[in-house]
Length: 184
Image (cartoon, rainbow, N blue to C red):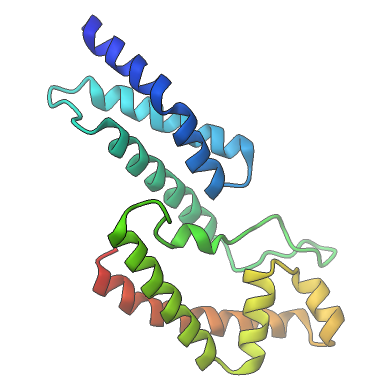
């Protein structure tokens, strides 16, 4: 048991910095990133003590971190597209497109999958009506709030929300095909 504990300690010391940087590149909130890091190390300790040893600890840690990030992202995604407070301000909610894509440093297959998804996304964006495309890009990719978009364009917030919703449904359907083909 003492050998396993020293192996766990050595792995944590060796991988902590790289894994922490990996998580922080994908999660903006430092507190949330640290929570994910701690959760992953906790899972690692629990899994390492099982009878079947973890052979590639580094790969296991990064896969677990990626899964944790995606889980948190999915929980946030389950919220409505945008929740408005009583004064018309958007609630603190952020969609991170980069979390839905395979990581840059996950190997050649992931790079191929990322390129295929980005190409399909661009094609799908090009297929959208301009008003839906503009709202989606402004809100999701540029991070501009609906209230500012409404003031700029003179279009009601509810109309902008509806346009974005139609855009999201279209993009989701188009990207699902690629996700299924790539088995992501």
